[in-house]
Every structure is written in C-alpha cells, then in structure tokens.
Image (cartoon, rainbow, N blue to C red; front, top):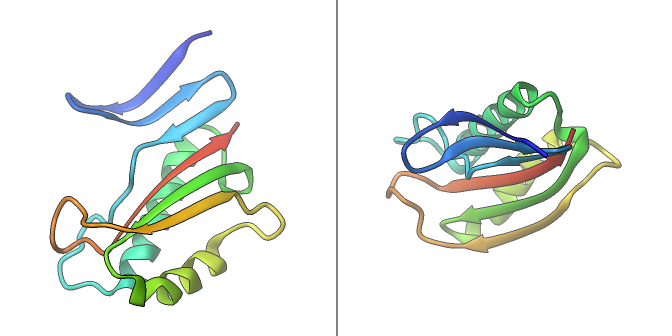
Length: 116
C-alpha cells in the first residue's frame, strides 16, 4: 500500500495518507501573535478543513483528535469553538492536555486522524 505525503518538509509532512487513513501533523494558528484562544482555535480548524480537503476527506470522517492547550483555564473557550465546528453525530475520539507549545504566542495545537 502506498504512502502519499503532502506539504513535505525536511522535518515533517503536514499531511500523510496511507490507504484510506489521513494523518495531519499538529496544526497551530498561522499568525498567532496577540490572538485569543478563540481566534487561534478558529484559525487552526480552518486550516484543518483545508488539509482534509487536500486529502479528499472532511471533518465528518474524523477518527481521533489530540489537542494541546497552554492553559486549562481556557479549555471552555477552546471547546466552544470546537463544538461549533465539529460535525454533529461524527465526533472523534479526543484527548486534550495542557502543555507548553513550540512558541510562546501559541495557545492551541490540534492534530487529527481521519478516514477518506
């Protein structure tokens, strides 16, 4: 079975497709500086929609999601954006943890796996 990689860089590929499974690398806000948890989460989910479309799938086929946030006090704020975005009746297995992210301006990073 072949492996198709998209947006390949020296360290990682943003999208990897193996068979009928699509793996996304962690996605952070494109311009995080000064943006709230709500704004960053909206930006991240918009990017995820785009990457899933590149792979020939969409959020209704999510299998799992890993979410990292920098402050659990903002968990409800992130969840409000997630809940408005996620496909009703097609919610993935999900975990959310508090963590330091790669740059101080980031508030949220999301990594998903989806079926095609």
